[in-house]
Image (cartoon, helix red, strand yellow):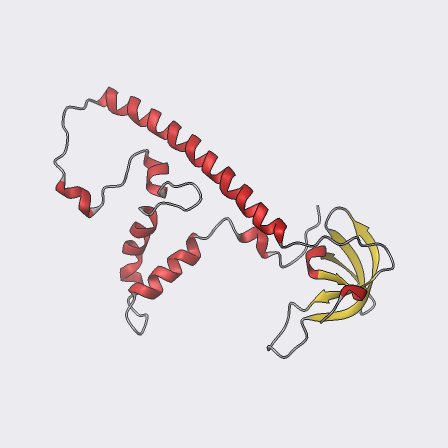
Length: 185
């Protein structure tokens, strides 16, 4: 299966790096020189914060128990627990957590898809159509948002077309195209 370049929609599932960078930017000193000292604190914060989609902390999904955070240290530990009880409870909690996380992720994906679908305007493209392509290599704000016109030479269902650009045939995702006669700006 051939893929097209620059499709940021496929990168949405992994946000931990972005969040980690934001935390380090906020925790580090003005010169951003002590970020490596703050890394463990930022990771602890990330791993003990509930995820908005599935409502669990990463720590809880890995270990099956709530993370022990400083406010939890005030509670006395319970010692009437044996190994067999722990293993049984851990297995049950992890199964329930995974089921709930899966349910919440499905709900979050459906909500995300619904929001995305509100803003798309599917276009019917045919061989020979004149189209404009989104300018992905803008170097400044004054460059045009759309470049072209180009001609469609092949339609690949459901979301790719091949266009003739500078005597070359390139494959493009339809999200980056607009019919020439539909352009109003």
